[in-house]
Amino acid sequence: MKKKIAIIGSGIGGLTLANLLKNNSNFEFVIYEKEEAFNLEEGFGIQLSVNSIIILNKIGFNQLNKNQKYNPAKLDFFSDNFNKICDLDLTIFNSGDCKYTTLKRSILINFLKEKLLSNSIIFGKKINDIQQQNGKINIHFIDGSSDKVDYLIVADGIFSNTKSVIEKKIFKPNYYGAIAIRTQIKNQDVVNLNSNNISLIMLSNAHMVLYPINQQKELNLVCIIRKKLGDKNSTNTILENTILKEDKNLINFFNGDLKSWPIYTSNNPIKSNQKNVLYIGDAFHAFPPTLAQGASQAIVSANEIFELINSNHKDISNVYFKNRIKKTNQIYKRSKINYFGFHITSPLLKILRNFFLKRLVKNKNFIQSYLGKIYKI
Ligand SMILES: Cc1cc2nc3c(=O)[nH]c(=O)nc-3n(C[C@H](O)[C@H](O)[C@H](O)COP(=O)(O)OP(=O)(O)OC[C@H]3O[C@@H](n4cnc5c(N)ncnc54)[C@H](O)[C@@H]3O)c2cc1C
Image (cartoon, rainbow, N blue to C red):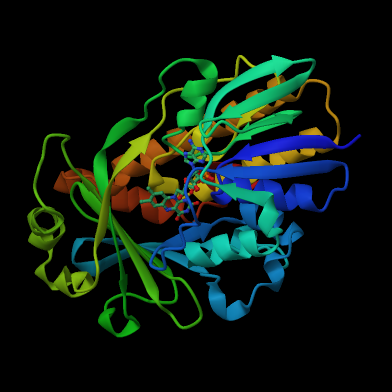
């Protein structure tokens, strides 16, 4: 008999898992999403490293219209005043059609949802309670409906309410002490940077990342700025007191629509107390954005679950948790190191950072160990 899988959340992780299951006739699945429709907001960009592209290509990402994505070859590092420090060759991680990719988030979500039948996703659903019954999981929804499944995969993002409901304990993410400000900019506004590459501009207590999201060279800009919890200043005032204070010319980058939100990360990941209940993506653990691994890890963790369920592994929960926690720790540590390095304020430390950075990007062993370990599945 077919195994039934319920996926909670139609974000990047949930949709990836559904696409992997779709091609396997041993399973039936359904996605339950709390919103009434997909969030296809146009403006946001996303970076995907090769570890996730390998998985997406299995479900046809390599056939996505080439105009809708971009493969940057380099990451350029800058200090204040657009002084270029060095660059990192991103192509060393690429192989065949698995390449470091940037694109609009809405393009990725569209690609993932397009391949699913419309009845695979049920909107407006939130779990109220679950019970174990004769080896199955009985899910009760807030609207009074229910479902009986073999596996319950929770992919409801950083604010995972489902985790609190299932584990009967409140889980709250932690404010990371920073906000993100996003906007889109035009190619012609970028004069001091190479708009073919990813540019990382390291300032005091802030950094900016700029990259093309398609062949038309529309550019995504995200700024991560340290901000105390009680600080009530508006986005424009925060920009003026931080990034623009260091370089007034950067004002040209912020003429468009600005979106801002606080950055949260998770506490330690947990293994569910419930049999055959597993957490993926940000619901398992959300990272600081300084290694750009959130979406990639949502995809990789979806694939890990798929492989284990597909091979009918006897100890899915323990094997998954052991692998995931190891990867999570590696990424979390590196994201914290990057966060520190990107936001240095002391002029002396900046000189030292730039000195070491120039050497480290050319050190193949270091790069393979620092990034290669993450980019390998
Ligand atoms: C500033 C910033 C920049 C980033 N840049 C990058 C980047 O460049 N590269 C990268 O890899 N990652 C990036 N990320 C991270 C990335 O966006 C997330 O890690 C990724 O979207 C997580 O995917 P997910 O599927 O786990 O959750 P999500 O994509 O958040 O999806 C969760 C889904 O679950 C639904 N949901 C929520 N609660 C419930 C519920 N109770 N019941 C049912 N459904 C529910 C939500 O509506 C949503 O559809 C960035 C994050 C930030 C903050």
